[in-house]
Image (cartoon, rainbow, N blue to C red; front, side, top):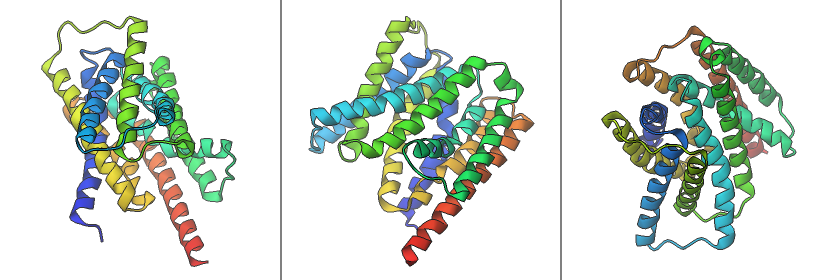
Length: 293
């Protein structure tokens, strides 16, 4: 049975991460994408680094900092930076539904690293691919080829970074995330400057509060809750947010963002969640079989 603290951490990852994509859309009303993401991660990383320094956390080595920079390039620059680019033309709800297929992309990279597909992984890929095709066939995606390419590249980048993270020497715990946010944020700001993104002359109150929400709730609170789950529950439970984030994002986007939910999007949600259910069930049964031998 889960303790109250674990239940709270689950709710945080379900609700907070499910709402961050609408917050990203709100911040884009006043900020260009790379400037917004870069400033968000630099601020969050600095706050986390100062807290860790106060707690006496060990400093990372130069090798670990280099690895954090590589990982930040895939996760934060390629993953989150391009997600912000996509959300300039694609609704937050549809974006989250597509990102819900992340484990399917992870399977593909696993095969590239030499993994052999199991039957349930092949079925999950087939169902997830159908969901993605159905989603991208909708009018919203057909009208924004740039947004589709940016979003697919973002998902591929994030899932690839998640794969190579297992093979890199990284600092322990939150020190790694603080370093990744600071380095990734700096790279995003450099890209923003190279592209000539303008600093906003005025920032709406909605965009400002959405930015603060991304820094505090999205980057600090939710990630800390997720790391606590990773350390204390099974991978199936800690990653269960991928089931809940798409419906939460669709509901919040329709409620607070006046976003329209297309029938194709609901069908894609069903297929993608079905693929994740097949994948999780197969992984759970495989783990039980190994434990029984």
